Amino acid sequence: MDLTILVPAYNEEATLGAVLERLLALPLSKEVVVVDDGSTDATGAIARAFGPQIVYLPQPRNRGKGAAIRAGIAAARGRVTIIQDADLEYFPEEIPALVEPILAGRAEVVYGARFLAGMPPGMAWPNRLVNRLLRWAVWLLFFRRLNDEATCYKAFRTADLRGMGLTCERFEFCPEVTAKALRRGLRLREVPIRYAPRSHAQGKKIRWTDGVEAFWTLLKHRFSRLPPAP
Image (cartoon, rainbow, N blue to C red):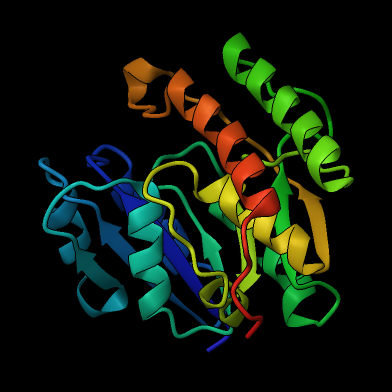
C-alpha cells in the first residue's frame, strides 16, 4: 500500500463525512485511518457508517491532536503517511501532488505550503503573525528557510515518522516533527496548496497558547537527543 491518510478528529460531525468521501475518491493505493479523539458528538457514528472503507480507531478520552496522530502512526500500513484535518480548511484533491515526490524518491518529507502565494484571505491576524514568527524561528534555530511550518499537510515516509520517537499530545506535533526532520537531514520539499481558514465560531480549536507551545517545542527539540534513525 502506498499511502496512509491519518484523520485525527474531535467533534467534527459537521464536516467529517464530506472529508472522508473526498479522501476515498482519490485515485491512490491508500487507506484512510480516522482516529476519533474522544468525540462527544456524532463524529464516531459518521466514521463508522463508512464501514470497511476506512479504519476507525476510537480513543477512550480526548487527549489532543498529537496523541491521536501517534495512535494513527502505530496503525499505519502505507509506505507514506500524510495528515488530513477533519475540517474543510484543506483540499483533499491536492494530496496526490503532495505525496508524489516521496513515492518517486525525490523527497522524504513534503509540506503543503499555504503562503507561497501570500497570506490566504480570511486568515485572522494573530494566526498570520504566529506563522510569520514560526518561519523566523525555524530559520534561526535550524538555518532552514521554511515557508509554512504549521501546515496540516505534512507527508512523511512512515518508517521515518515511527523512528522519530514522537511525544506530542496536542498541536505541538507540527514543531516536533519539523525539528526532528530537519535535524535528521531529511530531504524536505514544499508544495503550494490552497487554504480556506475557518473561525473559532466554526469549530477551529487552536488557541494562542498553542503558539507559545510551538516555539518552546522547536527550541526544546533543537537540542534534545534524537533516537537512532530507522
